[in-house]
Amino acid sequence: MLPAEFGLIARHFAPLAGPGALGLLDDAAVIPGPAGTDLVLAADAMVAGTHFLPDDPPETIGRKLLRVNLSDLAAMGAAPLGYLMTVALPPGTDDPWLAAFAAGLAEDQARFDLQVLGGDTVSTPGPLTLSLTILGSVPTGGAIRRAGARPGDDIWVSGTIGDGWLGLRAARGEWPDPDGRLARRYRLPEPRLELGLALRGVARAMLDVSDGLLQDLSHLCRAGGCAAVVEAARIPASDASAPIAALATGGDDYELLLAAAPEDATRCQALGLTRIGRFGAGAPGVALLDGQGRDVTPARLGWSHV
Image (cartoon, rainbow, N blue to C red; front, side, top):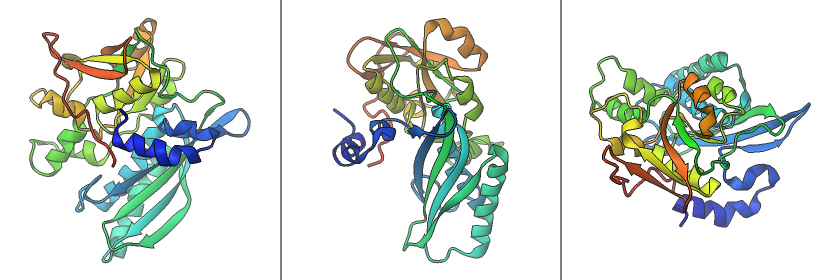
């Protein structure tokens, strides 16, 4: 059975989609672009109290909004071109707040070499709601899709998993974070754009970890028509004392999760990736195994947006 969010999309929005929408099954749409390129388009929204803390610094809110969308481009192996943004501002949003929000965006525009192309500003009774549509490009036919994993492929991830879960708790004062690194990881995820480009021709299927490692892996399984087994002990984590089920389901990591052929293991290792399991034959689904080979898959694999 499809998760509620995907069932809703399949019933109501997939019938509206054109060819470039890829059935609304991927991180972004892909449409023909100029001079041997495809355009890659993705959109994400953030709501205060759900995707960021209401008292987070405004400059980090703007940067996170841009970065979570850049992460979708990274997952498709795309380079950024520009973005459109809509902001719905509640009463009391003052000019200093907006100036700091814009300054954060300007900082990351310079870092990632892109600019805003347009958008809209409206008022709302609350909460603060932000939406951004990102545009990128890949060589024609070069976008990395969610579909493509095959039985026998290895499962790889970038970075460390669970930092979003740990970082939210650190930002709330609920988890030790003496140098502030974890809270920063929550407020300012790192889009793996250069890695996404390097994985063209290596990743058979890929997405970014936004809804939880196991939940997002289940999307690759459904798209590829295969099963997956993850070894809990292999999952790279910043804090080994944290419950592995929480780290694997918490989300907001924005690391890359991919399928690669066993013969590409050396290339994946050279890119700093960690192998955490393998895809296998069988009905689409994910199993998490402990060090003794016991199934410790949590009932809830991650987040759903509805």
